[in-house]
Image 1 (cartoon, rainbow, N blue to C red):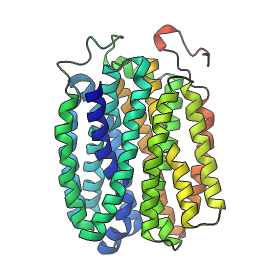
Image 2 (tube, rainbow, N blue to C red):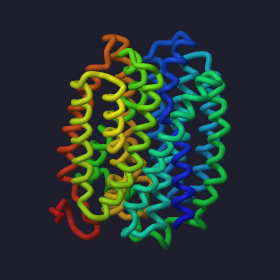
Image 3 (cartoon, rainbow, N blue to C red):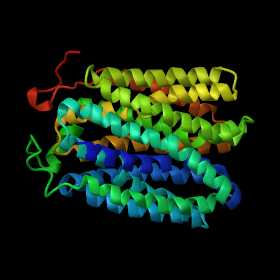
Image 4 (cartoon, one colour):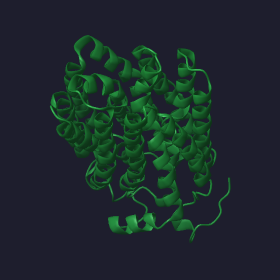
Length: 399
């Protein structure tokens, strides 16, 4: 178990750490290429959407053939996408590389695939905790990689920094060796005998699965809008680029604690209550941030509080899916949940650029993020966590 968690956590650290810093490239690239912010934002919106679409198929492949092959393929796409991101001369090619290629790469190197391995090889008694460890690694990756990426941009230049990252991401390949699974992984580890089609039809018709998807849409909208557009928002308000770099790093640092705590708490209290609390807390934190006078201190406080809530939805959401439907098709079902997350990500990052270019302000998107947080809190409360095979229909549960 230790090897699996260590390798899985290290892979998520690199893959998620690199992507969390993409907002630092918004102004250097748009200024150098003469593009609008919407051009950059649209490419990253496509990236998030591609990540969601390819995540479904990456999950299917990982469930059927094991995670190793999927991770290696995703790593090679990641390196190629970063090279293309650096060298693309047009907005269209930038969208294809930074958007489609890197989105597909992230599908094969992040949570759906890693959580599938965890679900298949770690007992239910420790599963939520283990998922919290993996999610915390993604947060540590943000804390570790965002300052490194900022340093690379300032010392090498934005283009050379992307080329350096394309080499660094290849470190995932040897780490993937620690996640190799012998033979077919859907046999003895599965407790329910279902085809892919049967599992998918069952989940998509299930009210609790639909509610989890809707909540995850909101998660994607909020975190990707903030992660990509906050550096430019702060610079527009007169704060230095270093404030934005430190803010993103603080989000990553504090989310190490937030995601671990969410995973650990998921072993003790109802996960739907954890999710509702996270979403409502995000809405409150954003509202207070916008109402308070803006300063480096207020940004750092906001980042620390938002960091506690940043990826903390991931362990309880995926643990609920495993708890309800079992582990046979966990990567695929996690991929579908994450697809909803990425539709929200697409809307958050694209609307940020679109509305800024037309109004000169991010205010409308900030207000949407608050309203959606309240909505997500409310719709997670009715989620039922009892295994589907132990009851017929949606029955109330304890806790």
